[in-house]
Image (cartoon, rainbow, N blue to C red; front, side, top):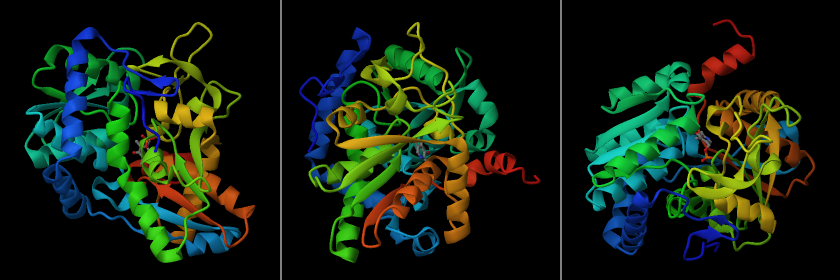
Length: 396
Ligand SMILES: *Cc1c(COP(=O)(O)O)cnc(C)c1O
């Protein structure tokens, strides 16, 4: 297993780059988390709610019509799109919600970009009876109105952020600021495997249910491990969640697919691992995208969940050690992946995993029929219909 050292470093990446006032809260989180994971009451309740509330285990679906169309290796889809609220983000929101309750915190804050994490957090807070405040850039509020309404319907407050580019990274800055002033009664429910230690480990462990289930399911159905795991990488949580339980299975290759946006030769992409370099952002040392003067760059992707200039430290470690390889897929190619899955399987994927679908289809073609590829279908595409119909020039 890949474990960080005592200071929270995966190789050269990770750590805690935060104001002094947050150090005790991070230490408390680390201690309570370790105790919770060793307590069968806690892990039992997480398992029960994963089953009864989220609807786990999600299926591992052999996409036979897709495979028949493209040829080559068999493609299996891990159906996180069928989890409650339509994406993998609920796994982590539930785990951290239970952790917040255990710590006696009554107020939850979170950031959201496209609104998927905000929806997952508001959902869990409604169910657990916790106060919930979601920071969201005002530009994202404008672009993602349906998710804003879902968050409000579940009783959470949406706080618009007007600073910077008024998008995700500004919302994270604001959430950190709130946490510094209210750390006594507040838990910051971070949405991906980013941020200061121990967040990258906590989020990974709650998302690792994806990979544990997939490993069991593929062994049961095929009697063997897959050859490739393919997942999209924004902050990196759905991909690490799939990869991590296969870490010691050295013959299983990991491929992370980032957003090449309008092309890696333009500034409009979010391919942090493919095209970035190491630095510090939002409390952790990892690959990131910055301009010549060291300013964090504005990023772009057609998939709102991939539009982030940082990535989790464990991925940076996997990249340097060669355990995983990373590639990038453009907006136009992701749309092809999206259409391909709609047409062949009657499944409307989110735009984020459409990047992984496109890459997996290209990979499958070059492989023989007995090879197995598992693709993490991290979410469903209902949230993206407006973007897609506009991009494909369909009538509204
Ligand atoms: C948020 C999101 C992502 C990207 O986040 P990761 O932390 O990289 O998983 C991918 N897919 C969907 C459906 C999302 O909502």
